[in-house]
Structures are given as structure tokens and as C-alpha cells.
Length: 96
Image (cartoon, rainbow, N blue to C red; front, side, top):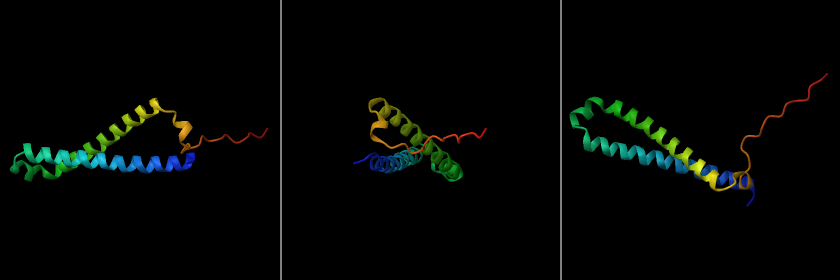
């Protein structure tokens, strides 16, 4: 496989993994709320808890993904296996 195929597969795999981590954190948070928060408090603060859990899940998945990429880039040379997604901008030649 070439660098472009590796890059596409990595981005797709990382996206799926990031969504799965977010769902796991969200379901785990819902389980904790249902276990430790009383039903009367769930009825009154349910929408707020859902919004907070959603943002916590997004933040946790971003944090874990960022840690994983730092760990992976320390272990392997990513330039060797992956094509750069964003190319550096070239400055146009200046006219005198």
C-alpha cells in the first residue's frame, strides 16, 4: 500500500475509534448517573445532565485521541508511512 491509502485508512479508523470512545464514555456516564443520582433529581436535572455528559464525552474522546496520536508518533515515524493531509502553503514569487 502507498502513503495515500495508508492515510485514508488511518483517518477512517481513527474517526471510527474516536466515535466509539465517545459512545463508551457517554454510556458509562449515563450508567453512573442512573446509579448514583436519585430519580427525582434525574427528572428535574435530566436535560442538563445529558448536555454535560455529551460535552464530557466529546472532551474525553478528544483527550484520549490526542494522547494516542502523541504516543503513536513517538513510536513510529509517521512521515514514512502517511501522506501529509495539509500541505504547507508556498509563497508566490514576488515581482520586483
